[in-house]
Length: 201
Image (cartoon, rainbow, N blue to C red; front, top):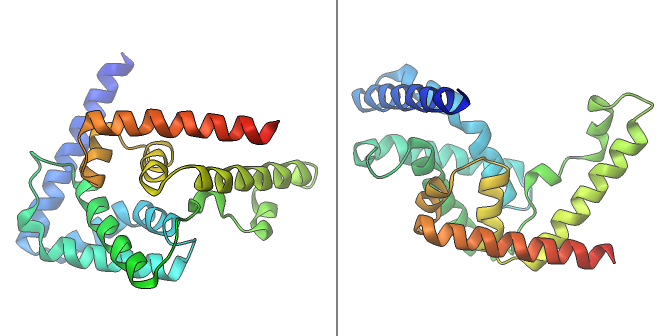
């Protein structure tokens, strides 16, 4: 039953994306807003994770991604990629150009960069100390992983664990085969386990 529901949801997503692409190709103004609303939050997180949490620069990347996507929407081929993977691929290239320009090093995922002063928004007074300790520990572990994994291993791990992309979609984003992505994910998880176990000793 759950599998049938997943197939039905996937079909609805494909239909929605096809309609959105069609409206973009027709130049419908509301399609631009729909594209932004649907994908901007994930793309912003994706970019910020690779730009040391620089929210403003990540926003610039997102805007440029949408500009490029709208300009090149006629090149999008749904037989080769999902719309999400295509957009993330554009954003990834923008980030790579920016990182080359600035000579930046690998980053820590934005999910681990939550400011300490936001803890009170999600925890009541009794749980604040334990919640803060858990977040700080998570940050430490993610920073340790960033030092143990290479950029591509970190990227595929974040795409799967944070952005919930399938191995096929990750391959479309990073330009690797699905089989290569499975191998990268296996190696990344193994390195992550070894690093976290080492740090726990």
